[in-house]
Amino acid sequence: MKLIEVKDYQEMSQVAADYLLSKVKTSQDLTLGLATGGTPKGLYEALILDHHENKTSYQHVSSFNLDEYIGLSGTHPNSYSHYMEENLFKHIDIESKNTNIPSGKAPDLEHECEEYDKKIDSYGGIDLQVLGIGSNGHIGFNEPGTSFDSNTHIVELAQSTLKANARYFDSIDEVPTHAITMGIASIMKSKEILLLASGQSKQNALKTLVEGDISENFPASILNRHANVTVIADEEALAMVKGLELLNR
Ligand code: PGA
Image (cartoon, rainbow, N blue to C red):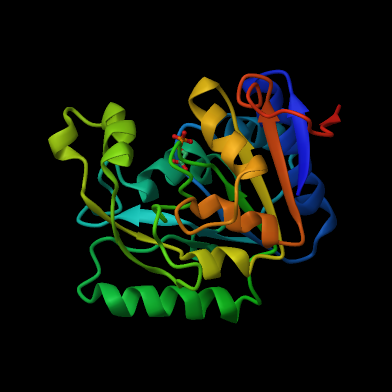
């Protein structure tokens, strides 16, 4: 795992955007894995700015998102489908037929999960997966205890996740309790992974990721077994990580 330490959220977002743009500009055909939440917002803002200023095109890019709430339609303001549309897709020239997000309203959710993995495989897998990390170590919505062998599946969200995400809803009671998420095995199949972390709330998670054991109790720990992971984290998030050879910029 390669660690890049940056100063703050803004620098994390720009470094991540530069990294992703280098792939977008040099590939003829690129499949991205995308994430939602507070962490990648700045990355998406930087991509939008670049698209306006430099006209970088996404016509050859496809995307698969990590997860979606069950029970929210794609147009619900708190759905991840809506988040992606508002925070990235509608501002760049990616074709909507090339963007994929699991449906949390599918009549047969098990079937939806199976089809999602099959579709990723049919694209030849994900070339570059962007990840955030939950304070409990979740990646996607794979909460502690999720099998490392899991494919895309339905999860019940941890109490800490409901609390963390309640900020986007009127009350915690409105946060959906279940979601569809790409599984740990689905994420690990990605050829390359970019994990972003910023701020004090990620300190414990980063310490456990870097210094802890590989365990299903801390889902992100599996990333230590992936051959091509780059972590871009800011000083605050890395404050508890000691004795590391950080690749300072
Ligand atoms: P955040 O969430 O980006 O909103 O902090 C990260 C995550 O839960 O994976």
